[in-house]
Length: 106
Image (cartoon, rainbow, N blue to C red; front, side, top):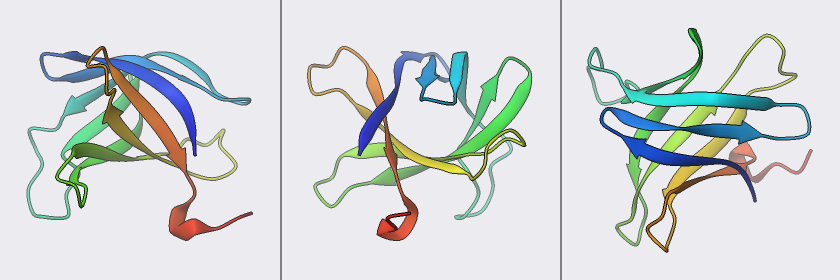
């Protein structure tokens, strides 16, 4: 797992940046989706500027820790990016942690 982003809380979600070898996205916003209905609908949408690049679902870990599970995708990506947004233990912000789906080791 690797930290690929850092975020701060805003009124309707989070704002921050995502940085990888191929992605340099500033002004990323993860905002609550007021249209979300149904248990499988994303609770948040992810934007860079006006472009929607993903969705996020509210989750709770086995330890009771709340986090967002994100799926990011864009035509410029070779594959979707899966990551989780957790609050930092120091309470200063939020970290976006990258993970491979289903434990794959491509």
